Image (cartoon, rainbow, N blue to C red; front, side, top):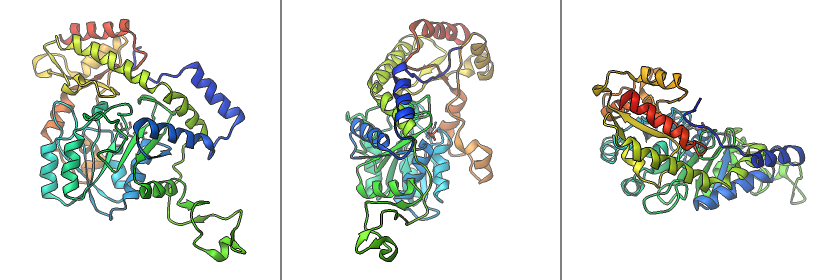
Length: 389
Ligand SMILES: Cc1ncc(COP(=O)(O)O)c(C=O)c1O
């Protein structure tokens, strides 16, 4: 079976993790710091905070920005539910804006419209499939209105802005959040990281990641409990606010450090796979390659194609079943978030999101990952040609 995506773990990755498990710390040790430094250096950000998932990272990002309960936060409907759920965890209100049909990223015009209509506090652009959003434009729009930007870069470690910097450098945002779920650019099993250039946000997130507890760095607030003869007590720690247990383990961080050695190789391979798809699939008349797929600055977490179902007789469900029968897995990214029953019950509708709906009906992600062989890719292209060509 060819999966739509899969992790790439080498024997050396496994050895490095085994060494951590057997001989080093399992939690709260040096490997987390090491991993954070490696990711921060790679993306070109001052700070990085490793967390237990991308979702946890998005939650902490909203908490660190400290907007009031009920604040309105814009995000994309074409995303995994975590992009919106994390806004609700922080007591705020997601507002969905329609997408650009060529990329699946939020539409700049629709963003401007929504900012005119509502008092928006934060924008969460999602780099869909690893293709960079138009961050310069989003930054200019948001800066004028003092709106914070949190990039949901779960798909986009290794991608670059059109100006050349890596996503995660936060050139156009306050915070950027990555996910290390197995099918992402690199994996820690489960995990995530937030990058920022803002020291104040960094300190807040470090504290929130671990129960809201301050251990060593800051002066104690309660000097009677915390000090003996003016010196900090060895056992002493203070909980200053309600935080969470969102720590990554040292074992996961070890896998992350080992995987980071290969990030450039992984992205290069993904881009090669995408180039081959672009070349052959563009010849098929019943599908469109996303415009963004031709932009090699993406991380190619996914390779979505837009199928012209109105011109062919096979349905999306039957197409997925037929592909499966011949050993090819595919997936739909994504069911628009407001269509999920939870969001419908909150009163969300898709009335203002015609492009997101059309995108959902047409889109299908076909396999892409660094280890996808040319032979397997040829089989995928041949099969698509036969079924919908
Ligand atoms: C766009 C997007 N945002 C956020 C997340 C959440 O990441 P995690 O699964 O690490 O919590 C995902 C996960 O797949 C995602 O695809």
